[in-house]
Amino acid sequence: MSSPSVTHRPRLAVLVDLPRSAEAGGHVKYWERIAGAAAEAADFPFDLTVYFSGGEADETPAAHVRLRHLRPVFSTARLKFLPYVPDHSDLASFHRRLARDLPAYDLIHTTDAYFAFAKTAERIARRLGVPLTSSFHTDTPAYARIFTRQTIDRLFRRWPWLRRKLIEDWRAPDRQGAKMERLLRRHLRAASHVFFTRAEDRRLAEEIRDAADVSRLRIGVDKNLFGPHRREQAALRRDYAIPEDRVIALFVGRVDIGKNVPVLIEAAQRALAAGAPLHLIVAGLGPMRTDLAERLAGHISLPGFVSPSELGRLYASADFVALPSEVEIGGMAVAEAIAAGAPMLLARKASSASVFDHTEAIRLVEGGAEAWTAALAEMASSADSRRSMRQAALDYGARGLASWSDVLREDLTPGWRAALARTRKEHVRSNRDA
Image (cartoon, rainbow, N blue to C red; front, side, top):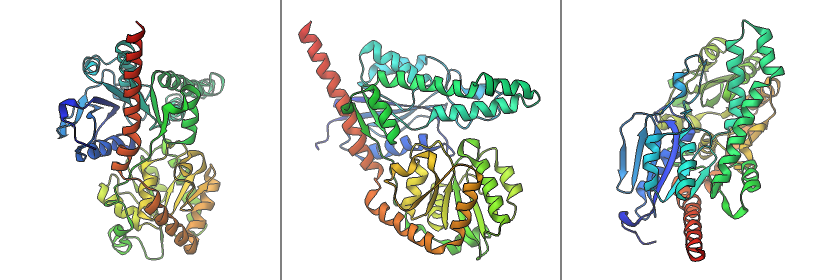
């Protein structure tokens, strides 16, 4: 592919309505990695600006790639009564500063369907005829149900009758989830191309758009950071003071109810009480770290946020990874664990296994503490099983995992080009028919 000059590249805006930080979740990291891949590709055919929420300084990693930050209009950070919010978003219905920027772009890509950036993009795209594309990254309807219920539980714990009324009679968590589902469907109708990761998201998109307007979006992996060459189990045991007779289980992610950490705590406690030789490393921040420390004392390490380099060592050196979250869309943690050769326990409801072709590196676990207790105990007791799963992970990682450059070049760029070409063709046809 020839390298067009920067001034002749179509201008593309990608909207990520979340703040950037070292501790940000996979949604933010996904687009940081894509921007990095675009910056390294001299022949990338778009002039790319990725918008994030917040007040950080803008960055220009390449002449054709920029990272911009816009302060939110009404962030969830202002809602001090909420007990816990995993990632702050902008609840405003319109972002005037973003709206002033978007008319300069030839193509707009949204990464959610619910918050200020996405709602603003819908209005600008409709008004100016700018093509809009979108991708799935977070199961927001499921999270809405979980955190609405948690908020009600905490705010109304002194009034159990009102709590029951809100949850059981008025079904507030389900109503909030249904509202998010309606917003998602409306947004998909406004998009000219949709990128999916899970099969269920593909089915939803194809209910609303033609199959030709829907395409797969994989999860990339940096194999320099995440791979079997990072394995240092003896050093890991030394650094984390883990006895030689313990089997090392690793959890990575926010330490909260959204990631199903209460089930992990209960299951690990039961497995340990039954004699399972487990030691759990929890890499992440969140409100349940104290519960973990107290209930699994002597059998847990809580390093908090860890650097990508340390995370690569953890994945490669742990005996297995346990991710009980039931609301994932694929998940960077799963891709990185597979690349490192880590056997995995995953929640069946999360659908992550299907994203990775049901590789035998993954063992699916039903919901609830009882099922997770049995799974943790079995993994801790079966070195042969862990060995065969590790080999399955390495085999799949070698043949089935994409780099971030692959994702940009093979998944995103064709969809973006198709949306732009379709809009141009429709514009020519409308002018001809006028």
